[in-house]
Length: 339
Image 1: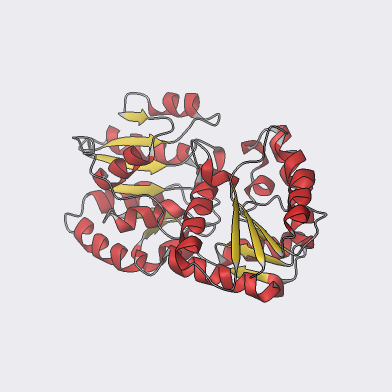
Image 2 (image 1 turned 60 degrees about the horizontal axis):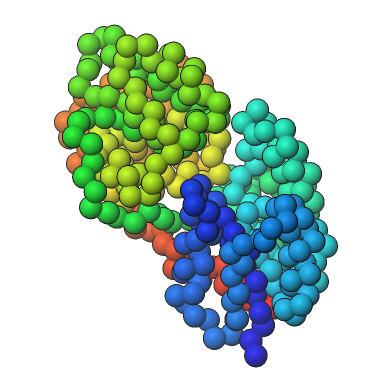
């Protein structure tokens, strides 16, 4: 029998998946599609009735021992610290270290207690970007030789739901401080006061403590907060946007950049975190440290009639370089290093 690889992909089966959940779901699908004859894959989709941390540190190791598992891959940070087999862990970013106020005290404490120890104990670590790899190695003293950078790929299905029947600029992601949405709302309001009123602004993401402040900042400018949206609606919102703006100050990858490019939607991103790595030369950027940079770039892109067509072509070509099949092949190669 081929060696058994257990994949803890519980986040991929959540009812409202975030970026790490989309990663788990798409990676599992792609690995199953490869059907490697030299590896036997078992996907763990639920942890049972016990608290998460109990399953992760006690229940999962017991399950691995009973199954005589050769390798475990945890797709989001919480690798068991004591386990009966080698471990691979995917660490998407260290936002819980850099932006502590974006996390509840309980959640942040769990991340900061477990993740450094999981990273040091893992036989291999997968990161979606060189930015996250470097942050991990510097912050936790992890050996770079055991880290593998495997980029993600577009995860949303292309749908047929009609986009909103209006012109708008879009930002996507939970309303957290690190997303830097106050700067975007202020820039949009500035353009609105100047009389540039062809576009509204749509912020698509669950409230994480910033909604009230953003509504206050918007004033009379047409800023819509949608809350969390389904995959079908998110796809439609991205397809219909005149421009996707990603003002975030810290991203371990920035998957929405590729989602927009796949759909021919131009992208304007902060030159921060992994965003320049993800968007390459196909995105436009602004200086997150210069308060004039974002409004100036918004004026330039929204006022250029040829920008959409030009950036759509560049974006599609760039996004086509990323695939889940490629990510799965590289991930399977990591498994083979250990079994």
